[in-house]
Image (cartoon, rainbow, N blue to C red; front, side, top):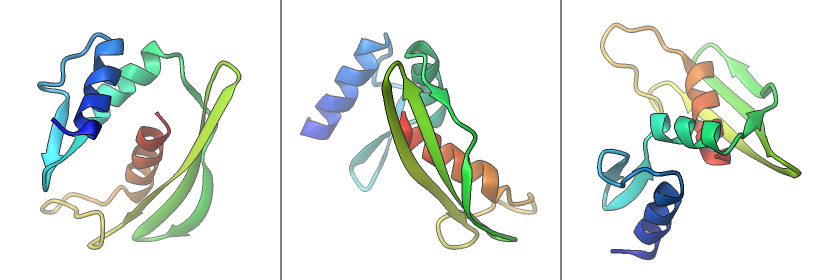
Length: 109
């Protein structure tokens, strides 16, 4: 188990969640699922300010999201660009703003 895996397992255990079913791997790097991070944010009572738009294009969105937990505040950027870091499956419409916000919230959490 890598140091990152141990950190993820510790965070998940703090919120009563096992690593199995809450983590996915890409090129041997572990990531916590978005739905799991949403549950963690709710349990931790993280509130989010409305996102600030840095870039708004038809196929791209870049947002800044601020999350607050008590006196602590953290911010991060979420980005989505169709066919670069956001691949739209099949004939579905592209929701670049939703994907950018999701990524920023996940990073803040």
